[in-house]
Every structure is written in structure tokens, then in C-alpha cells.
Image 1 (spheres, rainbow, N blue to C red):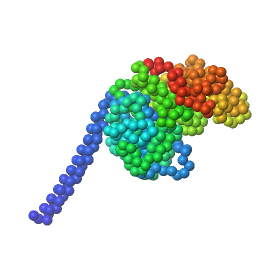
Image 2 (cartoon, rainbow, N blue to C red):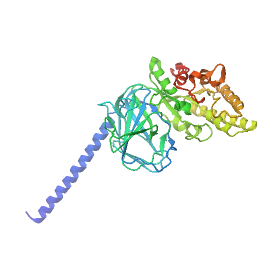
Image 3 (cartoon, rainbow, N blue to C red):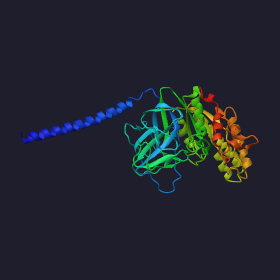
Image 4 (cartoon, rainbow, N blue to C red):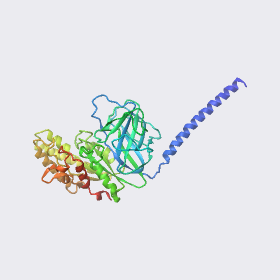
Amino acid sequence: MRAGDFSKKDGIVKLLRRISCGAFWIALASLTSMAVAQTPRNLHWTDSWAASPMQQTFYTSNTAFHDTTVREIVHLSRGGHYIRVRLSNVFGTEPLHITSVHVAAAVATNSSEIVAGTDTPVTFEGSADVLIPPGAAYVSDPVAFDAKPLENLTISFHLNQPSMPETTHDNSNQVTFMAPGDQVGATQLTDARSELHWYWLTGVEVGTPQPGSCVVAFGDSITDGWQSTVNGNNRWPDDLAARLQANAATKNVCVINEGISGNRVLLDGSGPNAMSRFDRDVLSQPGAKYVIVLEAINDIGHLADQQNVSKADQDAFYHHLIAGYQEMIDQAHAHGIKIIGATLTPFKGCGYYTAQGPEFEAMRQKINTWIRTPGHFDAYVDFDKVTRDPAQPDRFAPEYDSGDHLHPNPAGYKAMANAIPLTLFEK
């Protein structure tokens, strides 16, 4: 054979190799597309769990996660046959690279152990890894996973590059586990440590053949569950979710908790102010049909902290707060969402109750009167009435007081949830 023949043959072999390689990747892409395409098209998506993202404030040093597995535990409200995971880098200053994400059923809320046989990979546009730019949030592909109502799931992900935990939810009251290396598929994490924060995870959606709806619990630490039981899932939104699932007429209704401890209506505090996050945390949530608003006790408290607040300043504060409520009402109605006001609970005896305490107690009562007045919110729930001491209505009832005179204990949270008429969500 002549030298030219060898050259031609070599060129043909290289060409065939390129064709074969291209065919392989085309076939792989086709398989990935087929896997995504096999997800039923008639699924209805609603949030089943959520946590409002906020900029981290609890690290004082340049702490970064590097070659770390993070395993977070979430408590679903409604079940479904498919799920989607939502990750956020909204407060990040650098791209967030996650090399792999898995979901599984949790053995217990105080353990990193998962139920054998439930570990399931999660993909983003068919890929195991995802790069989330600063300021962005991504939703995963639908994942076939038989999630049960009120079930605890683990979401595990691996970070292979130094990553600052800039987007978090501070008060999780639920342990999150961190372990060295890539252990996303491990039945139980090795050499794990734990903290009471959620990192980067902001939602789990469920897909069901039947339409569903979502109740957004929107508020501050009393909604976030401060003084509830660690790993106990006994915040008032959790208790409401359990009631909805036990009622045949409301089994298709999810509850998500968009409370931020220390949050305020008018000014930033812990997390963005309520007005600035209402679109993100309420209006944009999949399946949102109802919102319960319990916000303003921190606004009152921070005003009281200023001392010697004039009557004119108090009146201006009330005017601006009510305008904020009205703006939420208008925005909710524009999106077809029923908005339910919650009366503010007592606070006498806590640090907010300064020398001007009686004046700000009168302010709380004035705000509650507005909330109860027909023609403002679509409905209201009277958390004040159910938690106050009948003998001293400016204080928590002793059986519902956590001890700080501002937050309920688990019995108080349960009483709040029980005070919400389920008929509000049956239509």
C-alpha cells in the first residue's frame, strides 16, 4: 500500500472516531432529553417547603465551605410523586458551584442518616452539577420521588470550591449537617458537625396530577418559630399543615414558612424588610393562593427602643405601617391571592416594653383594631385573642409564654394554628 493510502486510511479512521464520539454525545444528550421528557406534562407544581433567604450575619470570620457535603433536613407539608429543589445564591458575591445534589427520606430530624433505598440524584438541565451566578436562584429538573405528606426529607449537596455561606436562613431550628468530602449519597455522614441554619436551600416543590394550592405564612420570628422545639417541627405553620392534611377538604393545600426572625415591615433588620420581599416570598411562590401576614411587632419594638417618641412620630409610624399593609393587600389581590391578616400578640414584659410601654401597647391595640375591621384584609385570624392572658390582656397567657414574654412556646404555637378556620382554604 502506498504512503498516500495510509494517510487516507488514517484520515478516515480519525473521521470515524469523530463521528462515533459525536454520536455518543448526541445519544447521551438524547437520553437526557428523554429522561426529562418522560416527566408527565400535566403536573401541577406547588411549594411544599420553603425558607426565606437572607444575608448571613452569624459568621464573623472568613468562613468558607470547601470540599464539603451539606445535608439539610426539611419538613414537607404536602406530598407528591415528583419534586423540584430550589437553590439560591441571591446574596452571593461569587458564583456558587455545586457538584452534585441528592434527595432522600430522612430517618430522623436529629440525624444525618437517610432511609436505605431512597437516595435519588437531582439534576439541573440534565447535569449533575450546577453553577449559580451571584444574585440568581435555580430550580432543579423534576425528580421522580414518592414524597409523603408531612415527611422529612434530606437535601444533600457537595461544594468542591471554597464557598462563603452568604445566602442562608439563620433561625432554622432544625439541624443541618456538614461533613468533609463528597458524601451526598452516603447513608450516614462521617465526621459530621451540625448547625442550626439552612444554607442556599430555599424551597422544595411537589408535582401532582391534581391541582393544589399554597398558604404562605409571612412574618417574623413568631412565624419563623423562635422558641419552638429544635428538630420538632412545631411552629404554627407546621401545626397548620398537619391540620390541613388531616382534613379531607384541604389535603391538596400546602403551607410554606416565609418568616424571618427579627423581620420588620418598614425597615430592614434581620433580612430584607417585608415590603421588599413580598414579591419574592409570596407573589412568586408556585401555587400561592393564600397568605397569612403576621408582621409589625418588631416595628413597634424598635420604635419603642428609641425612647421619648413623640405623639407626632407615633402617628406617622402608624400611618406608614397601615400603608404598608394596604400595599400588600393590593399586590396580593392583583395576583389573585387571598390575604389574611393576623393580629399582633402581646409583648408586655419583654425588652421592647420600655418606659413608653403603655403607649406602644395602645399602638398594638390600634393596629389590631384595623386588622379586625372588615374591608381591609380579606379575613383575619385573632392570634392576640388566643394567646393573651384574660386577666392581663397585654401579656401572654402563662401556659403559652415561652418565658421571654414575646414568643409563644410550642403549646402557644399549636393554639395559634388551631385558631385558624380551615374553611378559609376549602374554596
